Image 1 (cartoon, protein in one colour):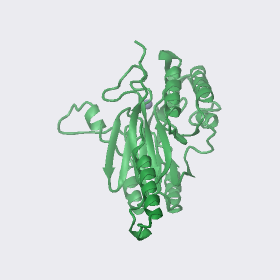
Image 2: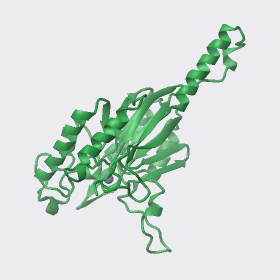
Image 3: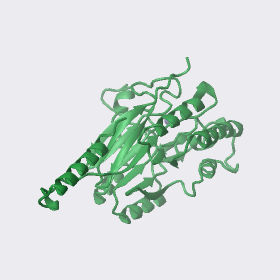
Image 4: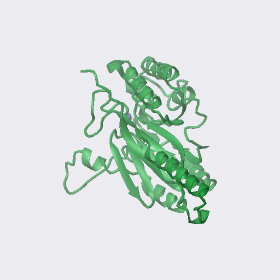
Length: 316
Ligand SMILES: [Zn+2]
């Protein structure tokens, strides 16, 4: 993937230097500002690693593709649903999937990785199907957090001149879950956003805002359109309100619905970046091929993003 903004930046820097050398540079203040790239980041979501359908080879191929770019990213954001499913899986099956995940990343990934949790990474919430009681060590989010070395399921960090917020967007409810932050996380988020002046990118598994689901979901009742509480954050209005108070929030990245979706609203861009696994390793899912997003984030809060297919051929 050719990188336009950086090439342009280098070119114009060269021109400015040449102009200065020739004594024709009248005033630095009047020169066109050069927008330099702060950091290149890859966003891989919905990996759904499992022993079947060569999913581990697929993830390995994707990681190689990411790292083989001439201008490779410096940070890898993982958008959750790292394994096929622990929500309804027993202990042995859950362990097998995490072993595969750990091995694949140990063998293939040389870049700093920052993960968030997806619904399928949470163990045993459906107790009858997973044959769990809820008292097992590692039940719920614990096992994934331990394996991924996460002290809390949500956190933030600064990297390359941006502030990254990693959310825990999945709230278990009964045998299922909804998209929502609890009060403690909301309080933390508001404090965290107030504590930085850097441009902010938010990472969540479930999209805060996404339009595609109105198209991909069957619309049985023409008088009423509904979006499931598990497909988009139920507290989306509060996010919009909160971000309005913090205009340095520029970008929200998500996965979950395995579609490529871009919503611009109130100065924030919401990108849902497809799925590494496409149709859960069965090929293309509706309008989405197996792929990942490559993003260039600039110091002034602007960015470019593109969805990159890594050429995976699903097992017949
Ligand atoms: Zn998924």
